[in-house]
Length: 289
Image 1 (tube, rainbow, N blue to C red):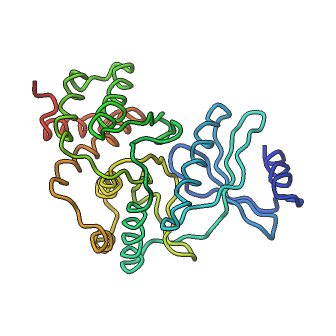
Image 2: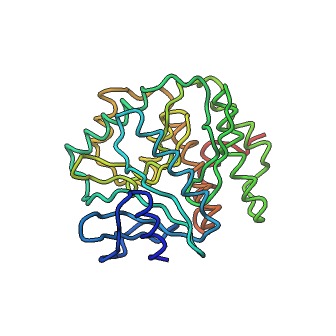
Image 3: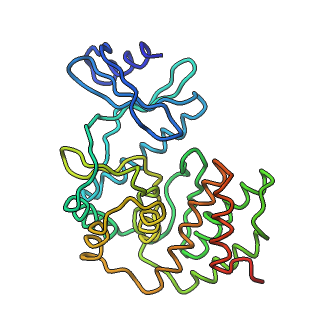
């Protein structure tokens, strides 16, 4: 596998690349991740089964879209490819370390400015992509309540239903999601889409965000994800609100947007996440007919 990866890197860069160093690095629960080097150039490589190639292909699309705003620093993709048994993604490698309060403030400012960038009028993305290893449907829609209710909450509930995991009547849950969001029509922002602390770090070039699952949606979705699993310092939210104050009603929408990610975790892992999903559904009265 590694000989094939090195050859493809050589072909893309136009210079010989022979791996002289390889070490495993932390990359989450979906992919195997490595740093490889020829003694001169280092790369970050994600590896998965060959059938998972679309996950890497759509990640590149998200990274390229995010990079266009000039407000969010993301890794630069070099190559997506396959070997006999595996698919892989090669990115530039940057050493990272945890965020500090000042750099967390800067990240909040950058994210707020990024959310204000762009002139998209609809919600969605040019392709479907993946949140973790779960397909995320991004068909364009003009109404936010319909997009989020049907392609986020409804989609996840249907996936769970197909696994025999029930959280209530899907139609009722979708309709009540629309009810909560009915009068909320935010300006579409290009979201990171998986903005939790495990996908953020400090690089030599400043705060860096990676592993996106991007689409155009409510900017509060990224903030809800940042709140969901904790790990962000108060200065991050202070930095964000210094540019873009939080709108009234965010607390309720935050629970709703968090539900999407909890449902996605139910789809991937099941277990305790089902209990968390039930709690959020009860808090939002989504099962009320």
